[in-house]
Length: 420
Image 1 (cartoon, rainbow, N blue to C red):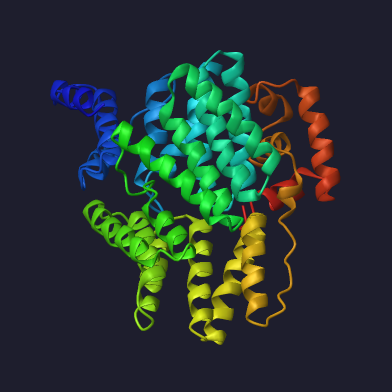
Image 2: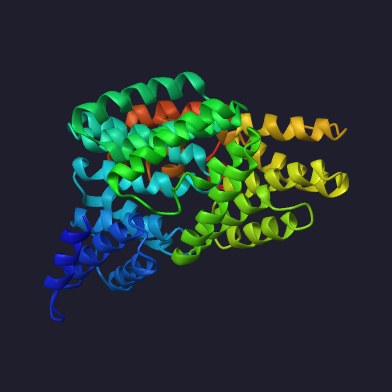
């Protein structure tokens, strides 16, 4: 990938149309991120982002995909956000159905790093349906692997096992090892949330082996921080410390906030009694520069766990309560249970927050509600979602019933509110 992308960059000339530079910089930036080539990946992705200014995406499926890659791989709070939305709008407006699965994949992965998991699931499921209909088995594998990650976070064990089994079969048939890695990472997190450290360790070591085989060294997806946590839980503190320290060096080379946050959290787990707080505070500060709500809550949880074990109960309660509030809002049931258990161990009785109303909608209902909340008519929403107007109306009635509302104005207020 790197060699081909480097050759593409060499072929770009100053008088070429922006599309050529966008494709070359995006391809190289993506490969450089996965190969952990320091700041080369982010630098080329930002070069592509600059070239997008004034460039139309309409009728250009490749540019739509590049727009998704730039926003997702930079993984910063603001970088590339407008490109993802532009790609989605362009794909809905005039792209063939065959182009949508790729765009929906990247848009869904971006949404999954925020609190909008229901919308992410809706994009994944729609993309998977379209990929099946157009025989795009590569993107079907990726979309199903992405679904395993949402399944894991929400504790949907039956869906996780079904999706994981299909990913395994497709990855075997089409050699989709990268997407197999996403699925293995999801299964590792599932075991970790359930407190099965031994099973989590097995999956994490499998994930590391896949990364080594593919040459992937991106700190954003490196299993080292999770290996640190698992080894702490297994009592292997020396191993956990080695993992954390080695990962810190890789994160510093990349220099991006998400990787640095993961590194500091891992160090917070293994640092001596008087030093761990500074690492957790640094992790939270770096996460504030991203949009990753779940990782923020997970860091609050790890911080609170260490504070409780250090008998700093007041501080522990504050961080554990913050974690619980976010996990409940997200619908991250296994993680809410873990935060509740920690609060209980500290002698606190924590009340549960109600889930967001959107968690009661099916993925297709969320997709339709989002489209109509953006001002589209029933026919426009039907055309862009490849459904009949009657199907849209049927699901809209269900949305109204579940949300206990009666108008499009009320729908817009709920779907476009601050918690969206």
